[in-house]
Image (cartoon, rainbow, N blue to C red; front, top):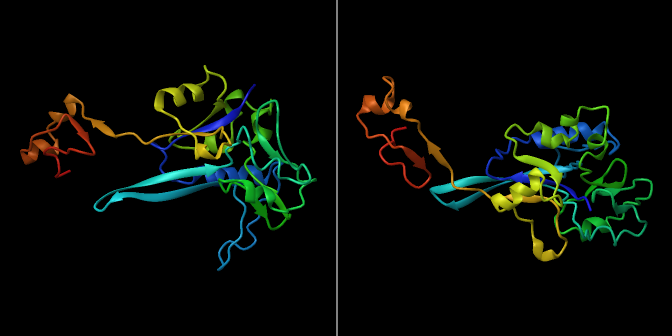
Length: 243
């Protein structure tokens, strides 16, 4: 059984919000319907977003770093938002595992929002219905588009390729390979929802300096008479602290 999902690499996400804006742009003009921002700047702002990026500072001062954490509907294999819906508006597609909302059936009761442990549901104040990420279902099956563009808008817009899209049940797919090789994990698996989206953990960053860069005439290390380091990581800077 196919299960389409996103795999997000936290090691290369820079928090630029390109995924947020591209998602908003594509879905506002697509079948997901109008995504309102009736009151975006006041004391009690309202707005509908399918994708959000949360940023955190981790570590202890002065050794802190910023982590950017994109979050949207995880298209769970056992979505708790589906059985609580009194009208059957929330449903999971059998052919690809995408969780969607039928706006014609939705009464805006917000039961699905309360049931979702990830806060992925959005209430559209303009249309009075619940909305969520659709994985750009209208785009990924559009045969009028080149095959390379049949991906969610957020995936195509990411400048660092932090977002991958594919079938996580296909052991040979790019997303499955990345999950296996890079230690991909699910968000809050203890809830038993079996999220389809996965995250790739942050990894230790290592910067390798090529030999020719060490002997250039304009190399600042040479001018300052400092000992160059072949490998620089976030633990040891050797003698290149003047950089």
